[in-house]
Length: 404
Image 1 (tube, one colour):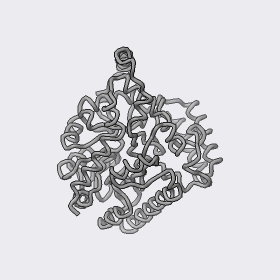
Image 2: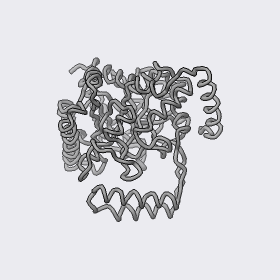
Image 3: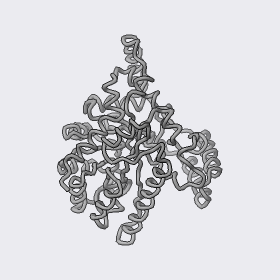
Image 4: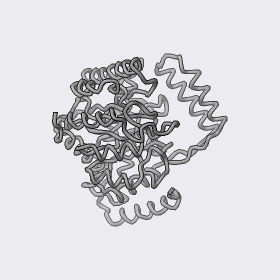
């Protein structure tokens, strides 16, 4: 079922006007600053090795496509993030397992190096208590997650090694099926009808270590089985709801209720392709393919990235497709809160990994979303849960239930 956005946008606007009229003293900016704002999925570590790119410099999304850096985190009132060790799903087998492991170790090292280099502004944390201490010290706190279990799929004892290196969230699968689980988006369809036998061991080992399990990108069957098997709450670090927009990456209401019943959290993501129709325009597809090929072998300097973005904008202008916006995002958020409850909903922009919608282009736009939430009736207590409290709770509960 798809909700008609124009109708709901009108309803939201009416509700917003009424809410503001009833609570004239509400100050969304102050309320945003009071909340601990944690985004649970920053793909920003992919930028750390780019020549000349520094997280301490202010960048512009319009210019180079990036969405997170320290100055913009300050402007957007963002207190911390889950920085992602992302490994693309490629071949499978012993050689691929080693390559995936090594790729993840390099990315993990880059995160550690960034935090060490910028230790006056960032702190690596592994617990909610450490996050609170970093926040009190005026530092941005950094959790580490592993997106795609490919780096450990060949040898699950590697989960212990990555745990010792600071990883506290792991997801089994990404865009394609792997040796652990079925993906929500593999064009070949399900391989295991959920988790593989090794995938079930992955769940058990994560529970034992106190690693928070992330079912984003997993098929509905995988999420269902993870909820049955896990002894700790589960997070969807960047996902949406299927009742608002029917996409394989979004979850149905029955699983959303089950997630909440097990104490878990869904972090609604701001990814246009999972929120609104993306028509296939052959000319646009060809132009984007040619653009990717043109820049495939060029060094990823700032100048090259800016040139790429300029040409990408020209293609978007010539062959436009509708971008999701804050109305679409509010539909997902309000539906998730209605079905799961405010204790089980948060947000991730999926920034630097393809996320971003009209009105929410980078982390500086988070206060604008808070204003929409306040207009819709969210209280300070609601915002505290939504922006970070719920996610920090499930980090802590996963760790409290560890048996290692």
